[in-house]
Image (tube, rainbow, N blue to C red; front, side, top):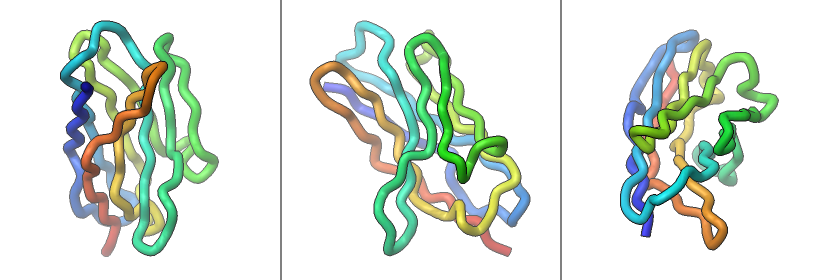
Length: 115
C-alpha cells in the first residue's frame, strides 16, 4: 500500500502564490509517475499536471505558464508551485501516484483564491 499526504493549501488573493506538497510513504521501492488533479465545487475532477519518473512534465492548458510541478525522489515528494492564482483555480487539489497495478490518491488539500 501507498499513502499520499498533501499539504500547503489555503486562502490566497488573486495573483498570489501557493506551494503544495505531497509526500508518499508505504510500499515504495522505486520511482513512480505522479501528478495533481483538482475538483471545484459542483464540477468533475480534472487533471492539472503530471511528472514522469524521468522528470518530464505536462500541464493542462488552463495552468500552463503559471503552475510548475517538480519532485524530490530522495524525499518521495512532489511539489506544485502555483503562481498568478485566479479565482477559477479554487478547488480541492489531489495528489496521485501511479503504479503498474493501480493509482493512489491523497485526501486532498483545499485551495481558495478570493479577494
